[in-house]
Image (cartoon, rainbow, N blue to C red; front, side, top):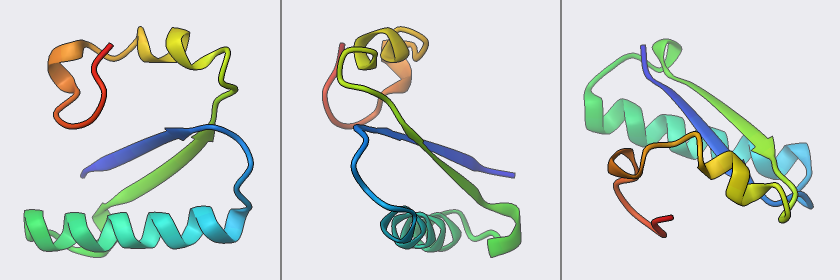
Length: 69
């Protein structure tokens, strides 16, 4: 059961987060050939100052695209 966690700076409302989550879910369903009900997505607001600390919990070799630490 895939779960995708998205961390981002605050400032987006729940409607935007829901739309993003649905698009991520649809992509994962298509790519992994799984049913939508087994894919969950969460969105966390992380203040800019706290973001580096939050990223410390993610091993660099597990960040596949985007900015590395």
